[in-house]
Image (tube, rainbow, N blue to C red; front, side, top):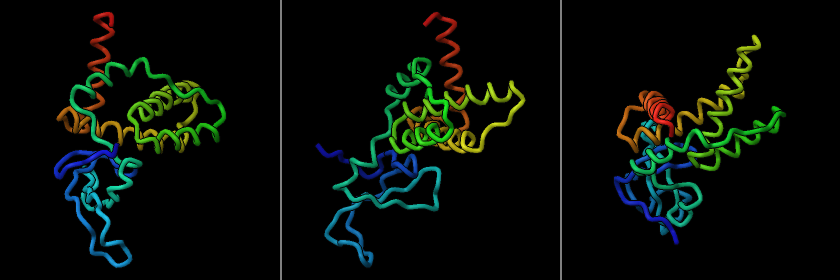
Length: 175
């Protein structure tokens, strides 16, 4: 069954993160099938951009933003989400790419947790953070924190602090 997105609804589009559905319309653009309907998406955190996704292919790259309840449940599950266990840097980068393409919060969290652990180990050994880790950490945080900010009604800059607060309170209460 095909997902239907409504005008004004928040969605997550693979490459652009959280977007608002501005319209569902045919396009009057040269070289584009003017009988085909498209979702016209406006990225929330990249205001100068517009994304056009064919309605009949939206299931492949667009999904609804987590609801507030789903976001809270997801944050509660973060401690149990496993890290990526790959030692080879080339293979690890390929796994990062796959996780980013998945358009899935759980996969973005795996990247963030893995890189947080790798960074701590590297810094303790007197080594720098790798360029690949820095890039994928930023990308995963942008996507995950952007979505959670919209879901929870928070500023994106407050999401990491909110997550830490929830996890810390679970640890104190013995959850």
